[in-house]
Length: 279
Image (cartoon, rainbow, N blue to C red; front, side, top):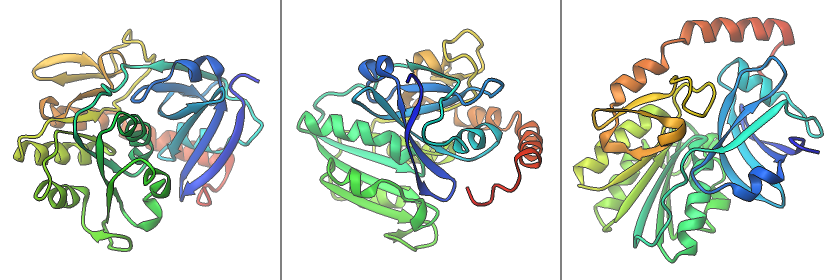
């Protein structure tokens, strides 16, 4: 059945993986692209990167951060999502580069997975740095190891891998190995500092931006970002851009624009559905 959840699993506290039946999107999806998911009839639109696509199913990973993502996380296997739109955005530029560094933070690790798989298939040597606040937030490491030549893990609390942040892992690799291009996908603040680190080494870095989105087709303008002094729309011009050209301070400010409204909506949702601490 179209948009039916065929499999759901918990990857970490508040982080869920969904396999959703949609043969049309699955047949067209490429690394770097995303979908907009509408969990229920009155639900908001949630942009999610396509982590994989095969056998007529698309794979997505969602972290509960508010009402809409909680609404999605509460869905069960066998249930049907109200709507899934995609694939959206421009795909990653996959080709032979030589040595590639992929940096993933939190659920951003799911987004670098298809990129790693595609780059490795073309003969690139792939290095990866994965980061999370603690060990249980470092997802999909075992699966990613199939497609990378070397992997480093950093955690804020030191519970897994190196105690530190992903830029510390970048330093360890970039000091010893020539890298031709890098990708960084994760929290906006993480991508900002990864881009600053890449600039120190004169390295091109690609980031995947996830600003506020509504329609996903460039009509609403909600996802506008400033790239190299020009206005771009993340949903149609991106979501991937040169990280050294992003106006990060503007983007971070825009992401906080509806913070209070989002908090209130989440509190009302929790009052309606009950305790969500188990998610």
